[in-house]
Length: 99
Image (cartoon, rainbow, N blue to C red):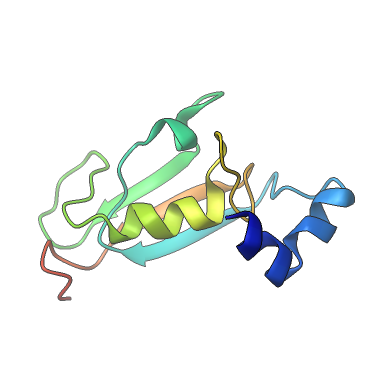
């Protein structure tokens, strides 16, 4: 994650105190697991919609959506690109990765 932030210029945004606060990022993928890195200081998963199995609560039966969400918004030991941003998770891929 540190290398990704350096190569994308995110560290320069951090130096300007820009962490994604007040921003919502939509992730259209396999869902999202409510990992502690998204849950500190209250849930930053502000919306979840399951277009595959029509469940109401966040989950990820493949793991890819949670991985992408972590790159974007993790705020734990490792910091994502926008660690204070809100996540809008739209599950459009099934457990096999197909849509």
